[in-house]
Length: 181
Ligand SMILES: [Zn+2]
View 1 (cartoon, rainbow, N blue to C red):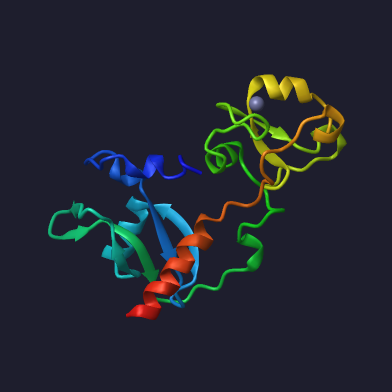
View 2: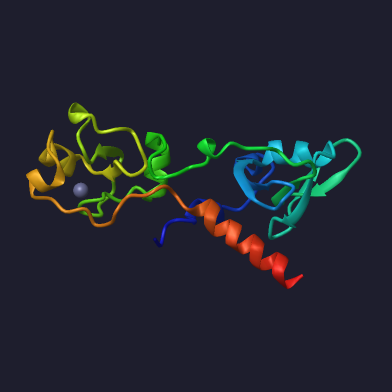
């Protein structure tokens, strides 16, 4: 997955920093979600959250009377109860944009540039819009596969689509940081 973080490496400017994703941890240090940096800054400046890791390199956010570093990870100061059903898993609902981002726009059948997604089990046979049933797919593969399963079409998936695990990866990093401080 060479391209995964390509968009994170864009140099920050006064106009694009709000598109940075900031990881939000519960008061218990469990990863909850990724939110826009503008919302994260509001949580920090209002005292609802603290920054536990700043964005690198340092990027200042200035308002009338204070300057804070753009955070990379924040922690809510009050525990928020989250039902497990909202957490992302293989059978939860995925969006077209989310699937393309997860697969870095690589077609799941030939690895070429993809701008659409394929229902692995076709929609006409009740294939759901879930992380495990959707894969990025280029136009030629999409029309070759048509209304069939990969087996019926004689096509093979290059990987098994799953829920994106970027939160899980970052969560492991948080546990590791905590263990060494
Ligand atoms: Zn393809």
